[in-house]
Amino acid sequence: MSRRVTWPLLLALPGLVLAAAGLFHPHGLSYDTSWRWFALHVPGLLVFPLVGAALAALVRGRRDPVSWVVRLTAYVYATFYSALDVISGIGAGWVTHELGPGVPRPPAVSLMFRIGTPLGEIGSWALLACVAVLAADQLARLRVPALVGLVLLPGAYLVHIGHIFAPEGVAGMALIGLATGALAVVQDRVSGSATASG
Image (cartoon, rainbow, N blue to C red; front, side, top):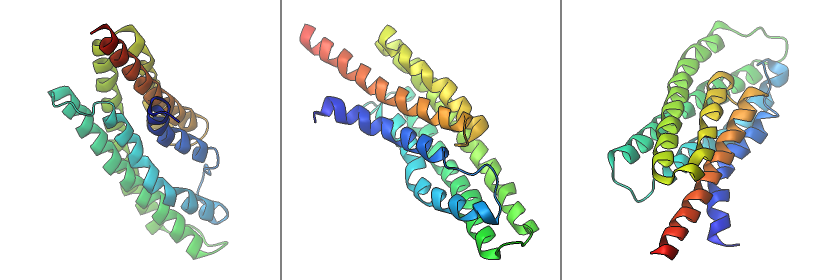
């Protein structure tokens, strides 16, 4: 498989994997859902940051201020969203499961959500900022072909309001994955055309 196919696919994969995982994400945390809640968030710890890495990869090799804003906001998203994943996903899921069936959720578990949720909010706002700057940058550089990058905006918004819960979060992560991969294709085609004409 050529790099022209594998690179966009690699950049699309994190968002698409999280969208698929979201189809199985319970909408509430109880003993009955706690193991699946925990089990989905452990691999999520490896995948959530890759969404930011994929977005940052679209400005690879550049040193201009806009590219650094994209990298910084992608980093903030990856860090703070991972904190949400660890605290409200892995931690709360594990503790709820270990408490056993029929045990009411203690205030300590609710306190985990009270810190995990605002950390996740910072991450999702950073994701929104990242895709807004990136989409504008790519549109300015690549013109009409980069319109596909505007799909990042509703994608990040849906993640902001729906995490990876179905249907909003699933759709949001899928849009982010598809738009990231599509922008990689556009970049390759535009750079290929510029090389051919030069």
